[in-house]
Length: 326
Image (cartoon, rainbow, N blue to C red):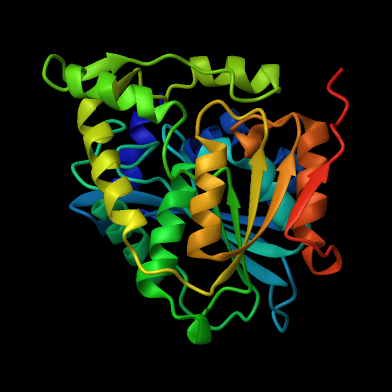
């Protein structure tokens, strides 16, 4: 559906919301309400990293020339995801007068690469490094870094390998259900050991990873979704898991949001590792599932209110009352 847009951008064009191809993409994913186009600068462009052509997007609220945005938000999406699915977070950041920078990881969304696969998670680090070098130049003392699931894993490795606490360029780091290891891994690692000898990919099952029924239905028909789980990606994840846990710990502070009804990642194990690696403030949300940036409106409201008001809410381990889901 978006093949022409991908080809156009990959050829080197930088497009804005006045371009019909990009406008169709923005409208399809509902990233920016049509009435807001005149007040939000939307740009899509290409950069090279990890041997692929990766697609980046910038969303910037319209402000007077002599002023700056209140801050900068950098978003790293999760596995099977792409920027088009992050409208709730993008719009919430724009409402706070933040500039938003995001890109599709290799093999995801509009970017090139084997679909939903990678030979090494090192390619994700190369991609993030190249993205930051090209798009995040210039001083902004209020830069926030967000990562969902696999995006959280990428962000954590970035912090542990590239960032020193005394030179931390990020005002806040917020991770949504970060991946350390997937749910039921003690059992599934034996399943993987068998499957990697027999098949190259397994048919994907669409998990009920949100209470937002409309989102779950939309993802099933999303033209940028992958239909399979490549065994090569699982192999790369296993190698990354072993490497990540051996990395030196850090004194960096970050905020972690984790749903107690998450069936995608091993939340108890993951939170224990995150506590060992960092100085985290962890918010547990009782009924929230895995895809937190696309959870129900009630859960998102609680979550975003907590994130933006963090300096006012003390405590390392906070449990919100279960939101109404009816």
